[in-house]
Image (cartoon, rainbow, N blue to C red; front, side):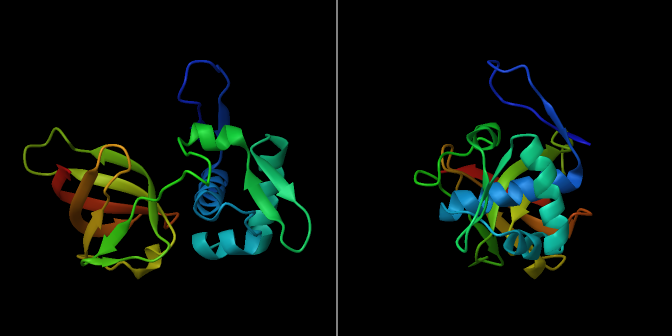
Amino acid sequence: MSVLDPKDSRSSESIELTTSQETVLQELARQYHQHGEPVKGKEIGERIGRCAGTVRNQMQSLKRLDLVDGVPGPNGGYEPTAKVLEILGMESPEQGTTVPVFRNGDPVEDASVIRIGMSTVYHPTTCRAELQVTGGVETFDQGDRITIGPMPVSGLRLTGTFSGTDSTGTKLMVTVEEMETG
């Protein structure tokens, strides 16, 4: 279980999500943030390796939590609520940016980093990062040189060696070799 918790202290509400719900919600938010239009369940399923029916089931529970709105019609799909964009620290689609991902120096199309977790930063010779990435993650092979960034606000750029993914296939495990701001 994961807890989706607003970053500001104005709200004391937290929402417990399953890993599957969180993965679906983050991919929805990323695609909506990138394109600014409703996202079809099939598109989300293709990105996260789940069938469209599974995504639709997750969307129903996310709707009940007021995290997702359904948009009817042929151009419809799903949209994250403003609450979700705020919780995930994303601006509205018109103002949004993506954090680019590079594999061996080449950009990975439609891939973007939405969260970075650092581990073993206290170790004198090894620093590992867990990168929550959406889109294009299936192209990575163990040993690939991964670069992400620059980050929109800090200009941070992180470079390291890809060592694998987590069980959802959306988190890249990277041994960090270099971090710089520019």
